[in-house]
Length: 85
Image 1 (cartoon, one colour):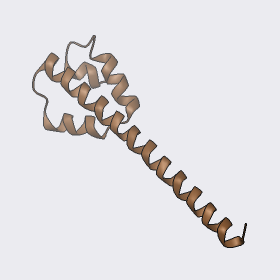
Image 2 (cartoon, helix red, strand yellow):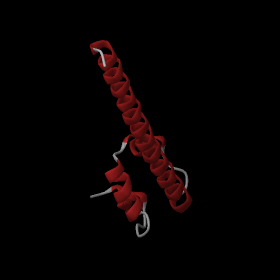
Image 3 (tube, rainbow, N blue to C red):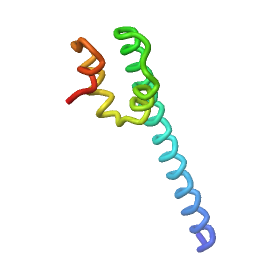
Image 4 (tube, rainbow, N blue to C red):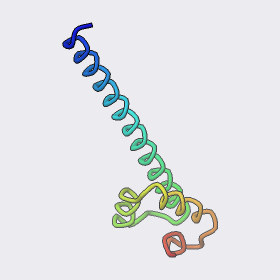
């Protein structure tokens, strides 16, 4: 195998790894968005229409926060209880 062929193979492998990482990142973002939308639906069903600033806060939150709030929505008596602490 010539040096040029090795370089072409390396470039192809490097490109493939980049594509795979991009796909993984896209899947993670899709899951996070889905979790945020589910939380919004649960909150709206339980407490009524959500204020726009709260919707924005949820859409910008980490998956750890969304998971915590999702757990709290089951027992909270108000929106403040979901998001306090």
